[in-house]
Image (cartoon, rainbow, N blue to C red; front, side, top):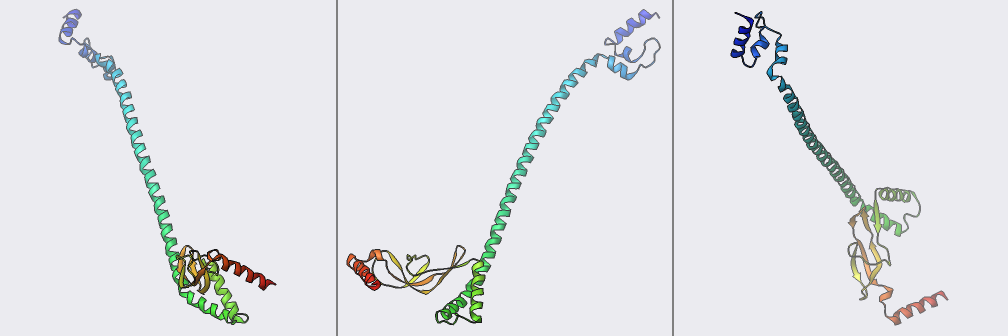
Length: 220
């Protein structure tokens, strides 16, 4: 068999030349598989694979970006919820502490009333009881206790409890304090018990003039 006939028959049996690329037609030995693959007719698929690889990388990058954005949003939402939780816990803790302090201070208001009566009778002018009363008042004041209600200030029904009323004016003021009122922070522990009278602006002109004349006569 001649070489020409052999090549012609191989061409008829293997039109694509794939067998010749793998098996040497003269010696019958197997060529290098890697070289045969590289030299084969499908070697153009490498360009298509490269293009497909770039498109897949772009799709994967978009998926990773979307996933990162979702995880970032979840983290931000979780951080905001935790911050709100901390503020709420701190607010509730402070409210609980203030309520406990207010309850203790409320129990001591009767002691403060007794000390005020003793002071009005002159029993707290000197002596060790005066020092104890002053220390107790200072300690409660530092905790946030405030007293309110004084003669001449406008009457406020949200703070004062009127047990007697003189006159019929529309601008009542406090005439006498029968029991002090106390607040603890913004919380009113006890309303002031007061007697209400008319303000000077509500008095008739003649009475106001007489009041001014009486005041001038007293000064002379």
